[in-house]
Amino acid sequence: MEIFSNLPLMIALFAIVFAQFVKIPIQYAVTRELDWKLFSSTGGMPSSHSAAVTSLTTAVAFEHGVSSTIFAVSTMFAVITMYDATGVRFQAGQQALTINKMRQDIYLFMDETRKWPQKKEEEKIQELKTLLGHKPSEVFMGALTGIAISFIFYGMLR
Image 1 (cartoon, rainbow, N blue to C red):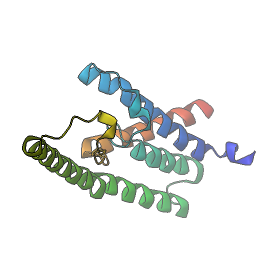
Image 2 (cartoon, helix red, strand yellow):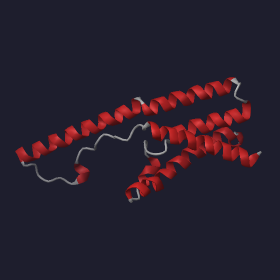
Image 3 (cartoon, one colour):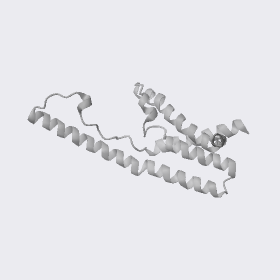
Image 4 (cartoon, helix red, strand yellow):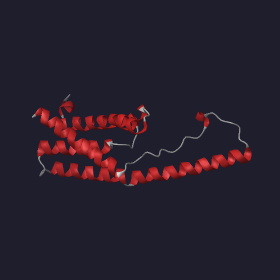
């Protein structure tokens, strides 16, 4: 299939998988807890979104040059993606933290005042996802990861 010969696409997909996987040992080094769910979650260090868009943009630069229109499009796509990861999505995660805390407080209050019967964990309402966006350092490290991956691939192939 021709799509598999599209090196910029393959590098970007690899960058996503690599960045998602590397979150697991990084988190383990910090917390000493092995959490395989990080592989399929959003947020965390490094940003796989940033790794993907910067590896794609770097690969486009290698393929078409920095003066090409496609490089300009890819660069703007990368900037917008990384801005969104640190802005809107990060703030949504912060709001989810606050809402989850409010929910916990309400549950505690209701439990104390009404003596709710004990429920199993899976019967409780799921919390909102708080790890939606990225801190600027996570986006920066994701961007460096993506750029490095493209340089490594193009260095090996050329």
